[in-house]
Structures are given as C-alpha cells and as structure tokens.
Image (cartoon, helix red, strand yellow):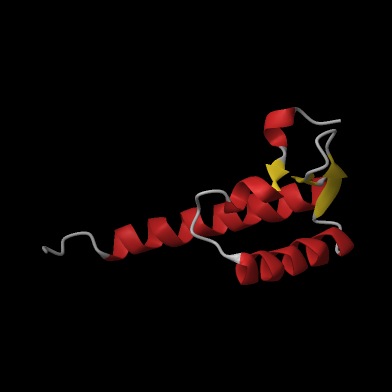
Length: 85
C-alpha cells in the first residue's frame, strides 16, 4: 500500500475549503468516474474515511498533463519576450 501522504482524503478536501454539500456530491461523482476508468484507486481508512490514490495509469495522465502545461507556459513566455507591460 502507498505511503499515507500519497492519499487524497475526500473529507479533508472540504474542511475549511469553502465547498458545500452540493460541491461534495459533484466531486464524489467525478471521483467515482475516475475509479471506474482506472485513474484512481479508492481505499477506506481505519477511520472510516474514503481515501484515493493515483493508479499507474492516473500517474501517466497527470504527468502528460503537467508536461503539456509546462510546454504551453514555455510557449507563452517565448511569445511575450520583448513585449513591455
């Protein structure tokens, strides 16, 4: 099993984050969809809370998204070189 710090605590997302119950329902549906697609794996902790971690597939998707964002950011900064604010 993964390290405890590698887990996303579903309840922890909402504590002090400004989310309300309707947001929780929508996020819960999205998390379940990601479980069904094999992007995240769901666990129930000893405390009875739901926890999620990325699968290998989910890690690859996340890496590809981050690489794409870095490339876009790099292109934006190259396009703006020489322009003054």
